[in-house]
Length: 437
Image 1 (cartoon, rainbow, N blue to C red):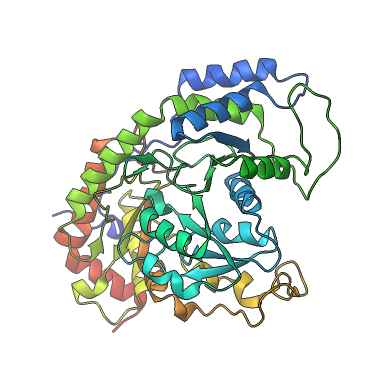
Image 2 (image 1 turned 180 degrees about the vertical axis):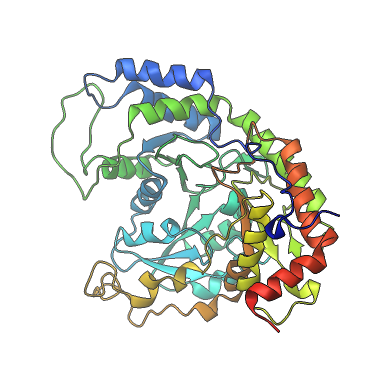
């Protein structure tokens, strides 16, 4: 029986086996070079951007799509499209990336957090109504890690209270909920094209979608300095509203459009890898692989694993310390797991200090409800997930092509080596590093 790599044994996953994401083909290179040839003189809109918008609208089945320069910008366009303004409150899951909440602050709205479901890690519909006030205007549903949220339940509540649903699909391109594509599940949706995402622009980028004409118009104006630029007509240079410069670069648009042609194939690859690894890890004590309801698919932007040291009889070491030691042990085996979002968003300093733009804005704004505070103890499920979670995936250890079942087999072998074959050695290492007698 080989000893652990962290103690001098051989690593399970050999150097160079893991291929980075995105998977770049000759077609991608040709697309970018052709866009480069057409990129001068500067013009608006670029053909590559318009083509990406058309293709994403067709892929998602939505009437309108707008490309912008980041996923955060796409989410802010959603907030603008929903006419969120000073003092308006928007419900956001407590476990997510900051942008799911900061996009609300960008329009001087107030994020109000909701705990998440213990199995899907997405916003818990049973906890939503208790957070609704007379100022609530929308719900942000995040498709976290690549798994769509519970949209039917969310919409039932939204319709009851007259709220808009904003889909944050940043991590879940290609996933489906009851046969419908991510990007089509909200009244409007924002998806990221960050280089690490399942649909990548290599650098940064974002996609906004909606079926509503007014939402499209508001989002389009916000993207372009508050102006309305009508194709084929001279630019008026007149801002009708507050706007930003959220335009997408044509080279990034060309790369993303090329990748989109292969998104169904790449999605199948991810699903196959994730299902295989879950099957292999499901019987190993001390870890919990992700759960996927039967009515949706998971595309594993992140493959989340929760550590459960209590199943191994370890109850004298803080869970987050056990997690961090496990990361070091597994990385030594060649498995690049890491912690992600180690605290709920409302526990971040931004929401504890309530300074925002300075002088306490937007919470101190006269339009805002007084006395809003963010107590991390109000989100016990999110807090527990953040203490326990490690992830595979992202750009340096993707579940997408060309990484396949052979790599998943090595990942599973490494977990089996640590948690089964060498459990005693692993726990000795844990206790030694944690300095437990």
